[in-house]
Image 1 (tube, rainbow over the protein chains, first blue to last red):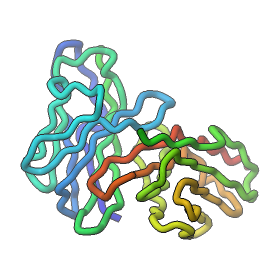
Image 2 (image 1 turned 60 degrees about the vertical axis):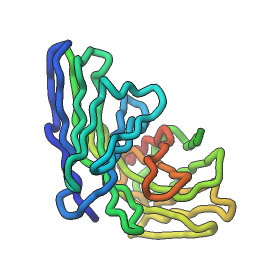
Image 3 (image 1 turned 180 degrees about the vertical axis):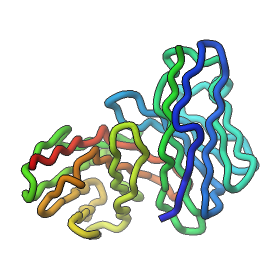
Length: 116
Length: 112
């Protein structure tokens, strides 16, 4: 299957700082990538859909000014958590599909964010 | 909004036994996905079902989607320790450009 990577795998930051998470499709081009968040012992919740070359689409209740998404190329989407607070501590996972009728979503390994 | 109910929430099975995990949707599905996750890690794609009545198998895992496309089951035959993990069903109600809605997961433990 297709490979999606994320960087960093873990990050610890102080409250009030910003953190950037990268999501890369390694062996295919992804016009659409998705960002999810998973709190402990809960399922994944879709945060936003990242479209290459256009603005991201955010799910209800997700603050677009807090979670900045940039999809500058067909292989890279970034999620920036701005002015992070302890309640933003979570497991952030991205996914991508190959498009062109290939609808399987392949997930990255996730990024664990801890805000102190 | 789309809701997915998974059952059971957790399952302890003796190695070598068969097991079934269910996923029920409140709406007709466009696509139903099964993933496996180890705690704190990413998701491993298992199977995707799109057609009513469809059934797919890979090694000892079989997934089915009912004719109405609202219910799916994942069956593992002769379970092994490597099958342990969290199984998640995810669904899309549109095409591949939609993000997925996930069930809460089934935590599978295999007892030797």
